[in-house]
Image (cartoon, rainbow, N blue to C red; front, side, top):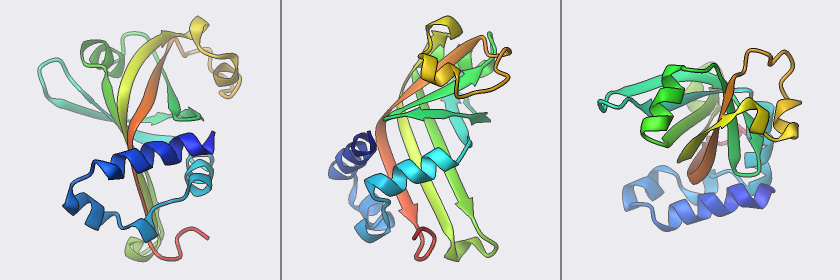
Length: 157
């Protein structure tokens, strides 16, 4: 499953612009195991969606990762759910940094297609991963199609 993330990252960089490749040099990218470990120990991300009128919307969300899919719990009728129904594409940013963040930061950027899934149709392994999830009416499934990662020197061992 870790290889799925790495494959998405490799495909992303194979089609990236020269400035993007320079900004995310190969030696600073997370390996397959590092990506999986980092994303699985984190619980929250900033999710970006597009409102039907084109204005951006960003909000924090918890997530559950399964391979290269990210499952985001939400309430029925939320802005994010409505946005996904209108324009099924999301961005996700997971990052951290130490004091003086320039020397100890990690960032993973994910983009991909999204769909709204009824809670009753979500995989059992997703449902059991969130305790106290009675409030979750729908899940949004983000399938990673692009992935960029960066870790400053010494940020990940």
